[in-house]
Image (cartoon, rainbow, N blue to C red; front, top):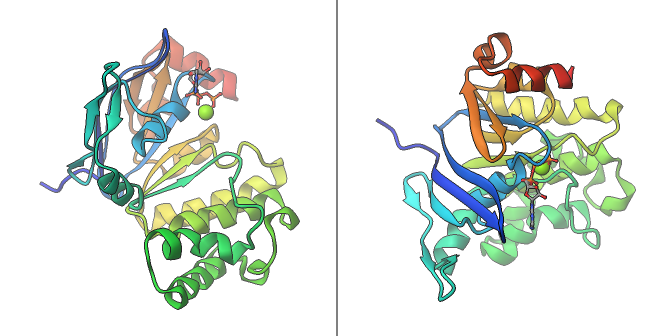
Amino acid sequence: MSVAAIEVSNLHKRFGPLEVLKGISLKADQGDVVSIIGGSGSGKSTFLRCINVLETPSEGTIKVHGEEIAMRRDSAGSLVPSDRRQLQKIRSRLGMVFQNFNLWQHRTVVENLIEVPVHVLGQPRDEAIALADELLRRVDLYEKRDVYPCFLSGGQQQRAAIARALAIKPEVMLFDEPTSALDPELVGEVLSVIRDLALEKRTMILVTHEMKFAQEVSSKVVFFQNGLIAEQGSPGDIFGAPKTEALRKFIRSIH
Ligand SMILES: Nc1ncnc2c1ncn2[C@@H]1O[C@H](COP(=O)(O)OP(=O)(O)OP(=O)(O)O)[C@@H](O)[C@H]1O
Ligand SMILES: [Mg+2]
């Protein structure tokens, strides 16, 4: 049996007295597209941020292709990553795309794509540029390679952000509501890039409010409620035959 691309076990996250994640276990096999849906504040972003340790979990384990992210307890009893080099290596296997693009505004599009490959991962500059140009062609932004992000539309910025995440050749892509900051007419162009990634069987975990899209591309859909997985299953199960009243209500509220 092959090793899961991502395996999270019993993840808890507390912010002071507030327990935002209350024991989440989730597995994504290679080639899976796992969509996470759920109401505002249910912990979706926090979960995604814990996977690459942008937030440190309070309890639980995270494995990327079988390798567990090393953590220890500090003197206050909180978990902290205990192996910086391992963490950097694991992060370089995860591409993250945020709601608000998070491009470096003082760098051109192509510079955004080569920054981490060259300065963090130590790749030769010409190789990084060749890959960046190939990715920019793929997301139809080659003409904008030397432009600063503020001159791009939201949809173009998000496509550049996806290309930037792909530039580290990640094994898994993590998307946190990649289209929810976009004007409606720009949503389609970004979904179409993500759809292509799904078609080429890239492993992805996608937080989204685009239910039709989730239904179309996901191998598994997970419904978060109050920091727990309330329901999970195939898109057909989740959208066609929701079991809990909470999920039925959520689906109704979206339409
Ligand atoms: N850094 C933080 N400090 C304190 N509380 C936080 C922090 N980050 C998130 N929270 C709280 O954790 C809860 C879950 O937030 P999270 O952003 O994960 O929800 P979400 O499911 O992504 O919601 P949305 O759909 O609105 O994006 C919320 O109550 C939020 O206020
Ligand atoms: Mg969120």
